[in-house]
Length: 253
Image (cartoon, rainbow, N blue to C red; front, side):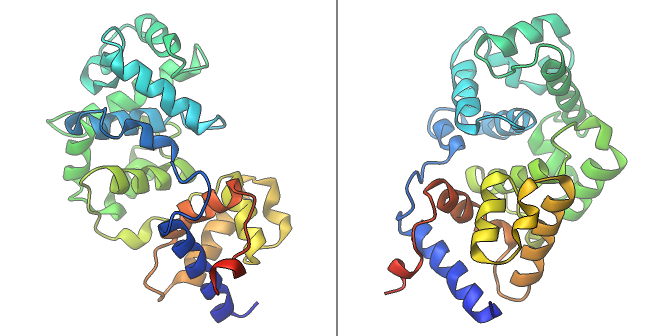
């Protein structure tokens, strides 16, 4: 497929999404809108994103919302409190509404990420972490995926890290510098949609780390110079796959 035809299909897909023509246009994180306070939203999105791995995203964020609305568990989204709390108490709170599913691993991840955030600025929250790198993705990536990677388990992984950047941009007042550095976050739906569009062969469908890197690199290459950042196509691709790949031709008439 020549690049011009491919880009035409990509733009059609983006338009389908913007016009609300892809079924299930409600994204998992949308349940937080209008419920989680603006001052809390970055911390809620960040801590929970670290557990958004190999699980149903809709159920995760529904659990997050229940925990936030419960005065007995709302504290789990306060990085300073979590960083200094007893791990057994944290475990009980995470498991109560099923924000955490693994009784040992998930509390450990949650607390390590909270400590990583708290130790990044005087404010001790996500806003402070991001301000410390001046809203620039490059030094943030070098910090979280390089010098202090161990402080941000799961969240520092390329798939979750890039989607986290996109979610913060989409749901909070964050405006990133070096936005083009947000690569696509290739989960199962993204892999399937990428193959369907003909950008990559079915060989990448297994979804291993190497396969995801191939997909991310392919999108970065094909969109270079188009004015689109790779992450701009993430949600349209994701919803297109979930909808069963409705024909693009129907929306090009």
